[in-house]
Image (cartoon, rainbow, N blue to C red):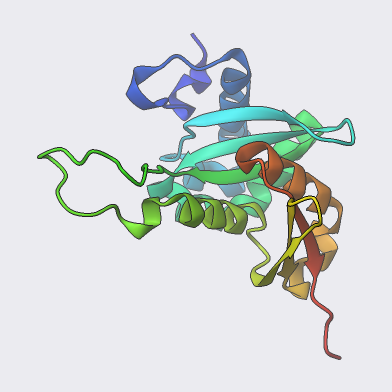
Length: 193
């Protein structure tokens, strides 16, 4: 059994895949070898990982983290992502694991009341968009309706992180397309100098 097994806890006791075990083992190794991340990674774990093929032929690693631990992961995201990108030679993206409920979800006696807004499809997809571009913030969104009926969302990002995220914009778009089946394009807002 891998020592990194404690770095991945799947919901409902499901067994992790080989790729998820590999990612968990690397996170465990980083926690042991990197003094800057050792204390921060101690109580953190992931709930899943996916290897996503992008349109340009490259691949990206998508990490799903528990929503309650998202704030802790964001504190160390830059260092952790840099270390994982060195290990896997791919872009690495961290997204919180969120739950969507159907509009007509049969509310049992255990759960009374209407569906929370944070559990709607639109809310979850917008939160995924925020997670993808994390160090940068989304300052504006525009949806363009094409003649064939398809949509293209354009997201404006803050220009403060332009140098670090410029090479990852296609990766963000590809990962968002794989998760939500929606097209999106990212741009940095023009800096007012």
